[in-house]
Image (cartoon, rainbow, N blue to C red):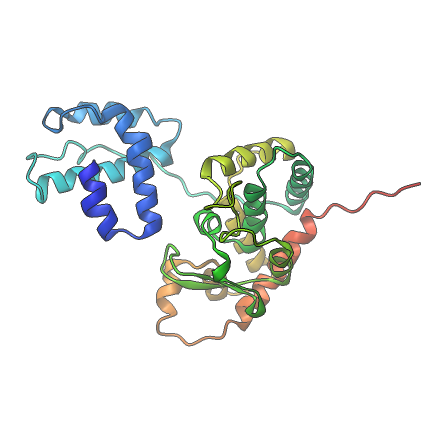
Amino acid sequence: LDRYLKEHVSVHNKPSTAKEARRHVETNIKPQLGRLRLTDLKRSDVKQWHSGFAKQPYEGNHALSYFRKALNLAVKEWELIDVNPAAVIKKFPEYARDRYFSEEELMRIGRALNELEAHPTTHPGALIAIRLLALTGVRLSEVLNLEWRHVLLPSAAIELPDAKAGARVVPLGAAAVAYLASLSRGSDYVCPARTEEGPVPLKSFRRLWKKVVDLAALENARPHDFRHTAGTYAAQAGQNAFVVRDLLGHKTMAMTGRYVSKSITPLRAAADEVSARIAGAMMEPPSKVD
């Protein structure tokens, strides 16, 4: 596993992929299987290990993919074993989700964030990350690792050099620009750790997200649902599939972008309308004072 990280992951994978591979190896694979000799590893060991993720099917399937790749290298390139014991292990079924937040749910999320922001124990970097997920529709990893040098407020855009589908420019709506402009820049990262050295830890983000879900009384809600919300609202605003997919940076549209010349103007208009609607829903009207 260490050889896999050193000779393959560090050399051939993008930084974001490499980070995820290391997380799975150190957190999900080594603790249970790391002490076994490679030549003693059986298919039944891998099956039993993977079955332990029954309540976390996506996490288990991703861990299996990385483990399978490491063992495949052990067979085909390093010649340490003859057969990959993870080759025929079936993954858990995965079902596509179309969940997006209604305006009423967004209002509850905004109220929960406002309440948590007043607590001194709330991680500020995690709070910023949740608000940016809502206003931009970008992926969680892209938000957590976002650096200020890639935020272009005069152009109302964010440059993502290591996005899932390759480098791309994300157009920002007016609400997202205003929020980013209101933030301090004491760190290189937009969503900093408490020490302001490095980005907010994923564990801190997940801890705060759980509190938001509980306070907002959300059911079956994930941070990724903000992306579905942005896409759904853009479609409801009358944007065509090309604009919606490019707004979210889907791979198919990124490939098309190599051959089709287009202006970012309609994308920024879509981002402006989507972020304004989400920001409006998340803002609770001020209470009246007698």
